[in-house]
Length: 460
Picture 1 (cartoon, one colour):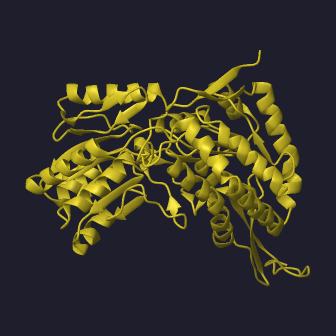
Picture 2: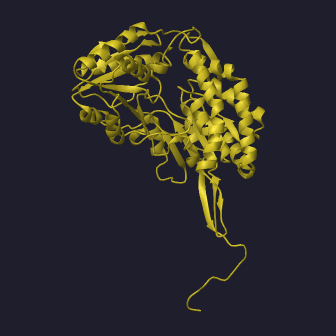
């Protein structure tokens, strides 16, 4: 029986997309189609693959407003922010071509040869918070390397995947090289059981850990897992309280707190300076403009749905029950949340990633204590330090255990020309972004000679 599912805009409650979930048989058929297309695509020249990818980028630019609208309507992201995501999708192609040439070179000498070969059929699981940009960051490097892809978007944000597929078709991508399977848990489970060679995932630690366990004892299936973080932002005493508060606000609350690099823990010194930062952030919370994605001049929209909003309220209540002191309570209206702050200094709290505009504050006595608090997590994706003292930065940077460590920048800042990922529960040491080429191809090394010559063989 065909299962129909719908995408509900969290800002309006409207049904913005409706479609059939791929059945297990359809998922296996999509994987078989990819497998059939692999041989020809893998042997297509890199120049041809890159040309198709560049045409894809052109198509994305032409459809950028359609893409942005789909993103905003699916998950509530402000239109200005969805437009930046659409732009990042197009820009990803040029960076990925440079990355492939840099990270997976072909080197030939008179006696040796190094080249790189694709893995095969790659399953890509997309997240809801960047439904275009993040799966795009797996798909483009995979296709450039000669892989074929079966892509399952988040069931919460299905629309943009269809537009992406149409852009690839317009670019001339052969049939079977990219296949979309829409659906929820049953569809994803079928893809895990199918004949795949790799799984590329961006999402929660719980789901990524499940995938890791599922493929235990199957080293032939490559896993690249990016699983978020419980990210700290340390502020010492920079000259500008206002700048510190702005950076903290942006780190914690952009995209309604639904970025894996958002700051979840704000680590401040005790005393008047820390108090002043808190007061400045509270003032910004009171003043920030929140609304529907199609309203101009808003900073943030809703979280992805009422279930996510309810989870945030419950998380806040749990921290209060554990002894946390609410400084600014979350204010809920359906899926909309006005940001919240809670002081959990000295309180034992769960080391979890909450996808919502809610920040925990920890007060410490000095920089060493702040670094210890920052590293007190199972995760290790992003962290940051706000200070005017370069010596403090030089001291803290090598001591912070995170894949992204920013200085006087939001924790959400990440360069496309750098790797993206981190240790601990933030992933399995296969960083994405510029390093995605590393997990999309394997090296093939060899010794070579232009003619057959008998080797030296002692004993003859």
